[in-house]
Length: 83
Image (cartoon, rainbow, N blue to C red; front, side, top):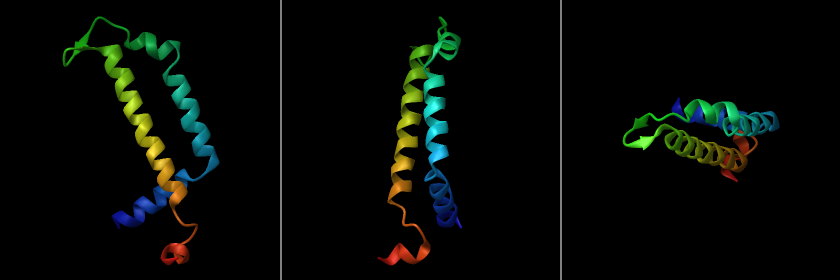
């Protein structure tokens, strides 16, 4: 069940529209309104909130890119799995 779900998610990530949506979300995340929202004197775990926002956004971006790369390596159908 879990393997089948991961293949379904990876197949969905193979779509061009998904790439465009994540690219636009990444650009929006790094623009004025969101940067200003997190630019506060508040500290979490001893770090300013803006730094945590940028670091977590960077980590999430790397994970999304990893999933895209896994989706590219996925065979087109189940019959190609053995080849």
